[in-house]
Amino acid sequence: MQVVIKANYDEISKEAALTVKQRLMEKPSFVLGLATGSTPLGLYKELIRMHKEEGLSFSHMVTFNLDEYLGLAPDHPQSYNFFMWENLFKHININPRNVYIPDGKVKPVDVEEYCEWYESRIKKFGGIDLQILGIGRDGHIGFNEPGSSLGSRTRVKTLTEETMQDNARFFKDPSEVPTYSITMGVGTVMEAKEILMVASGKNKAQVIATAIEGGVTAQVTASVLQLHKKVTVFLDEEAASLLKRKKYYNFVAEAVKKFQAIKES
Ligand code: PGA
Image 1: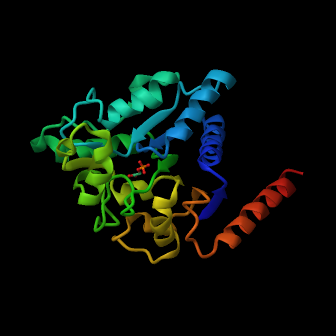
Image 2: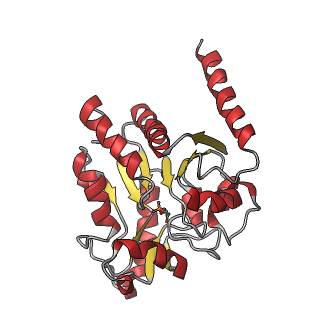
């Protein structure tokens, strides 16, 4: 796991977007896993800028979103489908046929079959090349709340009270926050070839320290990333403030840059 600490949110957004750009240029048809929430917004803004100002093309890219609220139609302003179109897709040249987001309106009776279909689509495209993740204050990735099996696959998941409270800020009335979601499982996320996590702000400092430097546990599903072969975590100073080995991570980041320069010379 590489931990990259930057001065502020803008810098982590730019750095993370640069990784996406590099991967996209290496493989135009690459498969990108996407996350919602406030944290990836800066990264999406930067991708939009790269499209508009640098001509970065997304026309062959395929995307799979991590999760969606069960019960919300794609045009509901708080649905993750709506979020993705508003904050990224409508501003870039993505082919709408290449966009996959769990369908919040699938009937409860059909949901298991639907989740299997979602998994099979990911497989059909050869798996996710790069998965973007945020982290919830309770350590969730996607909607894999504490206690989610570390081998779980795409399925229905009940939200915790903490997540419902955190997400209530987007709804007119807190009672409108859905209780259920469809989310890729921890096992699904772990099959991505590469993972990029972004976290910002003081309110993420504790969970970041627990997930990165604590033990691997289903009580903090993000901690399982310690077992993944290629993860980069981009943090601002505030989110990194409770890490014990911060000095070493900064040392590694510099050393990696130097090593890269040696390789290229
Ligand atoms: P946030 O959400 O980026 O809005 O903090 C993160 C998450 O719940 O995964």
